[in-house]
Amino acid sequence: MESYDAGNYFEEKNHTVRVTLQYKEYFGHISYNIGGNCFGYSVLGNPFEVLDEFDMENLVENDCNLQYSEDNEVYYVVLKNSIGDTLEGEFSKKDISNMIICMEIVSCEKE
Image 1 (cartoon, rainbow, N blue to C red):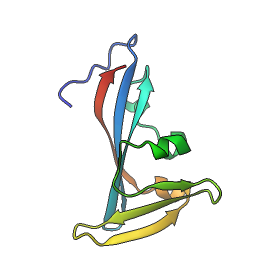
Image 2 (tube, rainbow, N blue to C red):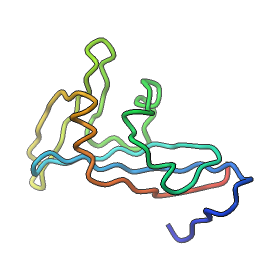
Image 3 (tube, rainbow, N blue to C red):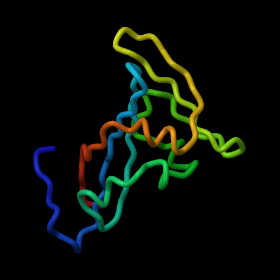
Image 4 (cartoon, rainbow, N blue to C red):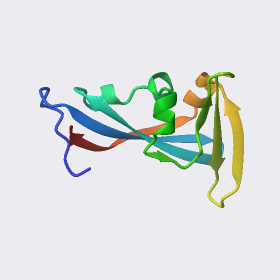
């Protein structure tokens, strides 16, 4: 991002947050939008605590085919390593949260 204005509390903003998940040498990414009058660290909460089923279906990026099964209360994900091998798995909210290795605000625009 070229510039980030964290000082204007009177403007509604739309942030795009990118999350990297990793298990051993396998990784994947999701990105989602979060709007409102929030900035910086407050935007970077645990996505698995705030994203609902609708949000999961409307991710900006989902290169790991992340899905949530409300019936089983598990997340399904397909992670890849650097040579393209895949690792598929089902994870609890706690386990998939522990796979978060990076969160970054990649864009911020006025609503």
